[in-house]
Length: 227
Image (cartoon, rainbow, N blue to C red; front, side, top):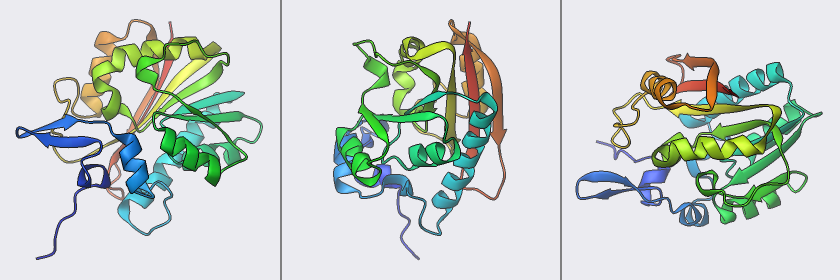
């Protein structure tokens, strides 16, 4: 019988770690990006299922952004910058900036795509106001990493937005049973319920879940508009 590999973010215990029989968030993203040249197959250059999912999810995100027609975008959770590059190519008249919690990831992204702008920052704990505001702030595939600080993270998006600004959440929802954060949300439906119950500064303008069996994950897409 072949060996079943854990996802890359679990193999090295960099992001989640088994502690006392429970899965705990560790969040060593610098360790992850130092030791894994392409976490979660962000480059989408292989023929594997996760690459197939990335391509699909990024196209859905791009389609939604084209409808919003923003002049400026901040992609939070940009990692190595592959989605940032795709968005900039698809929206050439839009200024697209990537931001990530890992300065190692930002250094690598800047080398991969020197023509793009990248920032180092943690949306959970933004302490200093940003001089720049954006028409769209994207929370890209980082829901599980900000769950415990989700209300504050959403609140921190507000000063980043222009008067017409919106927050777009693009997120994979695994089809397996989650072992972390289930008291907050365990799937797309419960995430929407959480938002409806706890959002004080946003309305859900758009939400959609793609459950196509073609892909390894269900793909959630949500647009939030400030009240």
